[in-house]
Amino acid sequence: MQKAGELAVEKAEHGIEIQGPGPTLQRKLFLLGLALLVGVLVYMIPTPEGLSAKGHMYLSLLAGLLVLFLTEPIPLPMVMATSGLGLIILGIDDVKTVWAGYANPVVFFVLGCLMVAIIAETVGLTDRLGNLILRYTGTNVVRFSFISCMGLGLASAIMHDIAAATIGIMAMLPLMKAAGIHPGSRTGIFLMIALPFSCSAGGMGTLVGGGRNMVSAAFLKDITGIEISFIDWAIYAYPAAMLAIPAVWLAVFLVFRPDRTIHFKPLTEEQLAKKPFTAKEIKALAVVALVFGGFFTKNWHGMDYSIVVITGVILMLVLDLIPWKQLEEKTEWAVCFMVFGGGIALGTAMGSSGAAEYLAAQLFPLVEGKGWLVLFVGLGFFAAVLTNLMANVAAAALILPIAIPMAQMSGINPVIVAMALGMYTSFAYLLVIGCPPNVVAYSFNYFKASDLMKAGIVALPVGVIIMAIIGMTWWKIIGLV
Image 1 (tube, rainbow, N blue to C red):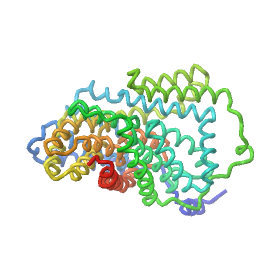
Image 2: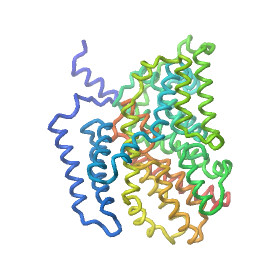
Image 3: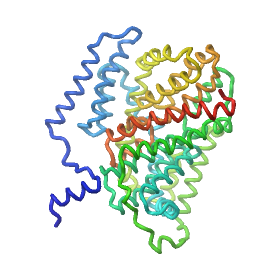
Image 4: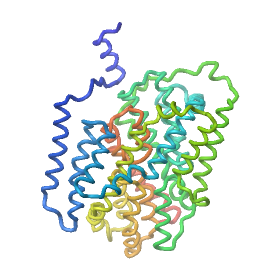
């Protein structure tokens, strides 16, 4: 039997954090008390002019919650349940509105995508995908990560970022486990954060890559009458996605420094041999194709993404692709409903309390009248930070009605502002609740919320810089600015 000391050395050599039984009761109480203290101190600050009493209360609650997000004295799903209780008890929002956030259509969309990926793994499709990628990348973990992040990131512009991230993670997990890449290791954290970050960055590439893009285009048309077509958006944004994906991947690489000597297990002769698809694989592929077809034709049929993907899950169960008990056991219900649902409730309250408008009002005077680039980067950076606390669609919808007229009055092409809000909100890299790909990756327990923030603090500014470069070069070439 391996001694504890030898095991510790082996784990340290492979960059694996040795995680004990968790924080002690004393430490939990200390961190909970610290969060409460921070919230009270923010509340004791005199209410600034222009901020409502509810908005002040919201910011106080948010300050305390941020301590809990980063320290996790209790599991993150329960932190997000605490946020809902806080919103109700403090009178920031009513009970029905708060709990409705936990049953938002986006929550069911995330849940459905996760279930589809679990079923694809069960029937063997994700193994095929992982082996296919391995054929072309070789077994080096870092090279595999870069190529798969580029491929799935660019595909996110068409197949939706959460779908690409979920399928990619499910294809990568068996390879990671076979290679002995453990939760908490630098290499494991790198692999599990780089992929969702890359897919989020790629989602900006076309109108269907994320709801934020379509909302930005819709607001632009409603306010100005200017319509951005699918082709127009792709011309403006896809080059930015092509640069942003490797840039944010490199940012995560530099933060966690994965072990470049680790290799996945080489494919066996049996795995290299081309095997015909099984009946279950063919059925699963057909349903997945129908689901993606539903995503692409949303403007035609009008059904929400959540309806499309949940219908796909039901069809897969009808086709007996997985027993319900097995699907139920593998699905991270708490993460989907409590973490992401709590984030939506928190974001809704940020808007209804007036806190978001107050923060926006502090920013606009700083960027108004200073030219298109300052407006583009300033609004974009604000949106990128704000979208970590509320849905990216909501962040765009909050800022656009103010920002587009401001651009018009300043003689700036309003298309620039609409593009900024749609594209910058792809960089929701600071908090797990920032976007669905983060939530899905977190559900596999390979990293802590604080690990994601460490990577995000570097990746978010990198994304902002890439966007500024695109604006000053590519957009000038094509005549947008």
